[in-house]
Image (tube, rainbow, N blue to C red; front, side, top):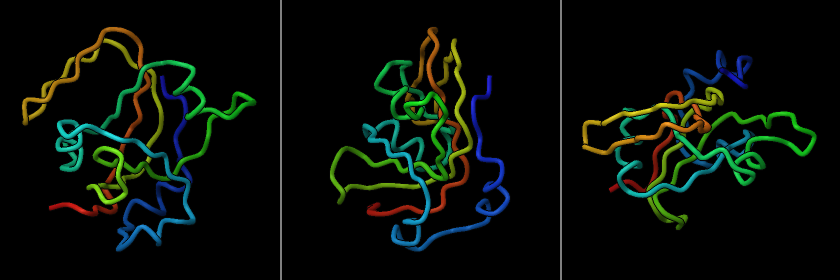
Length: 132
């Protein structure tokens, strides 16, 4: 079930690459912090979804108080919590609710769950930073 997608900006931003975070200040960015294993699979573009529990916490991140879905252009993923840590920014392609996901990635990292969860759909990576 697709809940929301940013169809209007997809055509414009799909081909855009950025040189710095300051170029992205005009856009709405959803922020996530990741542990090293999922970060390493996602920064290569192999993992195209970020899964989160369906909870009041995540509902408040994805929805406005009136129940409408928030607008996001991009998603920023940072390894851990420091602004000096590695990060990447990719296109936000929408939000789904999924269940019964069992995936093993090339690094051996696995995502396994049977219950319903949010699936943030990710597009092209437009900026990477602080990578070693």
